[in-house]
Amino acid sequence: MVDLEAKKPCAGLLPVAHPGTELVEVDLGALTSIAPFAGQQDAVSVALQNAYRLGFPAPNRTTGTKDRRLIWFGRQMVLLAGPAPAAALQKNAALTDQTDAWASVSLSGNRAEDVLARLVPIDLRRAQFGTGHTARTLLGHMNASITRTGADRFLILVFRSMAVTLVHDLNQAMEAVAARR
Amino acid sequence: MRLTCPLCGDRDRREFYYRGAAVALHRPAPDAGVAAWDDYVHLRDNPAGETRDLWHHEAGCGAWLVVTRHTVTHAVLEVALAQDEGAAG
Image 1: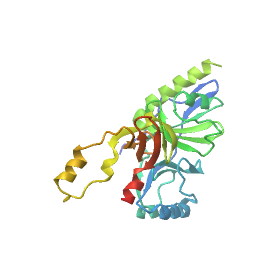
Image 2 (image 1 turned 30 degrees about the vertical axis):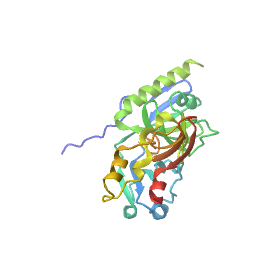
Image 3 (image 1 turned 90 degrees about the vertical axis):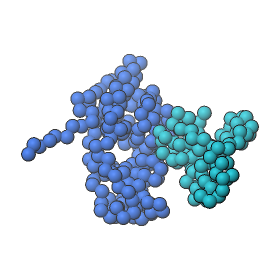
Image 4 (image 1 turned 60 degrees about the horizontal axis):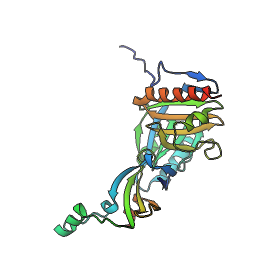
């Protein structure tokens, strides 16, 4: 039997670095969207607490850290990044495996905010958008999930089919920001 | 133009998709009669004043929103989740 090797969405495209910014692909582990059935959010929150010691994040927020993270992903939906979904969650929520559906990259550096300011229509500066904050918004013409994971570090997710455009748009903005030093 | 999504906050108009008058939330009963269905499917007000529209936060949280706005001043008066109006009636 042939042992197939999974190809990452940004294979051959990343990493790239420019003065003040760096863009790398990140492996988040398993990705599962969790959409509680009507009126079941409290039950799902309890199940998440039992399984991962993580609360159901409020809109525009995340809970957890690198290895297991819950990212608010839209109206009545969170994305579990890291562990496989606990069986107990199935009773109260629709679970969908999204592991291969998203290209995930990390943009870091002291000019990362300036790069995103060129592409994203919301204010991502620290005073407005602190560590652990997340947003569903646009990056260029792409629907994206953007999370601040550190003082000068962002986690960016877009549909996997748009990985090349994502890297192209970010790389171009990184170049332009570096040129204005 | 900016809309304040109840979930995401103040966002640019390019994140939203416009559907039309918010009558879709008040579908008549199947046996409501021809007049009620004619009104629901075809007849729309065209007010110089307050109007209620359905918008979809397409590039954001994915919620359907009921936006109350003024067609003369262009002021956006209220943005609410369609989910809440659906539950209320």
